[in-house]
Structure formats: structure tokens, C-alpha cells
Image (cartoon, rainbow, N blue to C red; front, top):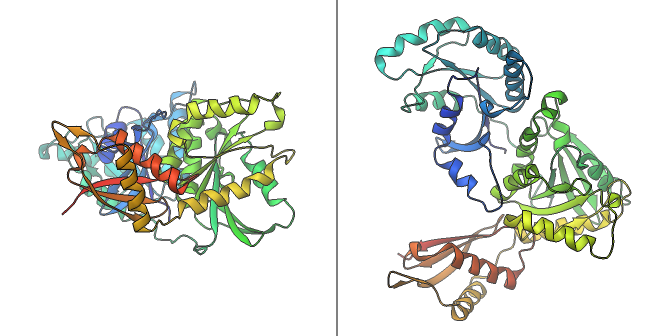
Length: 436
């Protein structure tokens, strides 16, 4: 089931970004720590009462040259489209403003749960500031202080009451679920149509499986697939077209439900920063990834063109070195037949289990080839390795001191595991733990 989504909505200068940062805590800096990915702070993850959720900071939306109130309106509309729960944030020291009333009117129409939070109530003596805000019609306002972190627990308690309870569709373990993500106009819908239009493909539409997504189940050569179509989630196109970075949000729900994510690039336009941001969410989610270069028919080519393009991808997507690259044209269907076999390979790698004895042989051979590092006279000792999870494959290495496991040596072990077992298309995780 996808994570619930909270959106923080309100006029400028009420403290939306401060509250956002308070709620996500250290996670913002953690998700930024991916080589080759630059992040904005418009989206992140949080956790409350052992429930993971996604959170949107609409204060980071840039609507260009739109008038002031129109910007507020469009930001609120985006939040309404995306969120399960909306935190309506106001500034207690300012009282109710005309802009607050404008946001309130928009949220009335949303039919989404709204929790009213009054910010800048920095001490109990200021609690009386909240009473005027009953007039907005959202029940009891929650007094909070972004500066001091006060009241956020009660606020999140209330928000969590409104998290959706529905369960995701269970397709069975043998069904490969994949989604296509990328900027607008890279050809995602055309590629879906090309895949579904191939010979011997049996198709059935399953609309509304999870909120606004459209799932299409099909079978090819006895393998069942479900393509999770983000195009089925489009609403109010003008708003999204004017805020391109919100194409990230178009993809988040689909990524979470997928086994394999296809990162679709436009061969005509090349690679831009937004492509890297969107791909970074798939990597962060631990999904198998295939990079798809669409519209390859529009590129003037010689014998070196494909190799140069691939080198360019590897340079920009250094965090996806394991992802295979497929060049194709959805329009002409040239090379589209190469995509499903690559999806199969990535899905199989994502679910690989390695026998413990063989795994330890590989690790010990790696250590013999490249001895463990030392720090301040202490040498890292590796005692035992075991696989603890799949999707993605996750390995725990028991050592004398996890602090001695430098990231470069962890990368060396990852490379040796890939040499031995393939893992093409999937990230793998290596966790160092002390031996008890």
C-alpha cells in the first residue's frame, strides 16, 4: 500500500517550510546524500506512530509570474490533488487574513480531511491566539510552534487519524509490477501503448485500484505484468505544466507500488536536472530500475552515437550504475521488443536470494583480495554475512566495529557481490552490524 500523503497548505510567511523541516527531521539531509542527485525540499518522508508517510511543502512551489492570490490558489489545488490529509497552517500572531480565508474557501471544496494548525504559539500564555481561528470552520485549531517544535505530536496524532485504510491490490508474487516515470512529454503514454499493442499480449484494464492510478494487467509469453500508469493520475493540467517539478509527485505513488521502475528519457532533449531528481526517488525507494531512452528514431546517428549517449547517462546518473539502458522508439515501435526481457531481468535480480555459504565464500575471497581497512590502529574484521531481505537484496555483515566499515570498502564489497551474482537492474544494501 502506498504511504499516506500529508500536504502543508497556507499563505506565504506562516512557517510552512519550518514545520515541514521539523516533521521530517534529519530525513531531508539523508535523502540529499545521493551522489549525482540534487534535491529541492518540496517533498520528503516522515514517520509517526510507526507509520511512514510522505509530506509535501507547498511553500516550495514556484508558479512563475502568476498573481499573488492565484499562486496561493494553485498551490492549494496541487495539495488537494495529491494529499490524503491537509494541514492548513496559519500564523497566530497575524489573526485571520484575507489570504487565509481564500485558502479556507478552496479547502472547503476538497472533501479531504483538513487539520487546522496555528503556528507561532511559542508558549502556553499565547494559547489565546488560537480562538479567533475557530471562525475558519475547521473545528479545534492546534496550537504549535515551528521555532520550538511545540505541539507537533498532537498535530500529527490528529493527522494520522485520517490516513487511508484501503489496501493495495494483491496481484500475487509471480506478477511483475512496473511503472514509467519521467518528465512530461518524454513519451510515457506512447510507450505504454506500444507495449500493450504488441502481438500476443492479452490486456485487461483495472481502473481505480489505488486512489487515482490506472493499472493495466497483461500477459506476454506466460509472464503476467501490471503496468501502473501515472498518466491516469493527471488533473488540472495547466497547474502541473506550470510547476514542472511536480512531475515528481505524479510518480511517487506509482514508484511505491512497483517492482521495476522505468526511468524514461527523451532522446531529442537529452538529460536535464529534473530527470535526475525523478530517478533519484526510484533509487531511494529501493526499486529495480531500467533506464529507457525514448524517441531514439529522431536522433541523427552514426556508429558512436549510442555509446556516447550511454556514457552521458552514466556520467549524470552515477547513483544508477546498476541500471541497464534500453534505446527504443515508442512511435515506430523499433526496439520495443527489447524492453520486456530487460524488465524481467531487473525483476528477477530484485528478488534474488543467495545461499549463505556461497555468499560468505564470495565475501571472504574479496577480503583476501583487498584486506579490510584500519583506522587509528584498529582493523575492520568481518566475521559473517547473511542475506536478510529481498526487493532489494539486503545483506548484513557482522563485524567487530561498524564504524570501521568505510563507505568505500562497502562499495568494494558491493562490486564483488555484483560480479559474483549479477544483480543487474537492482540496488543492493549492505548493513554493518557488530557481532554479539
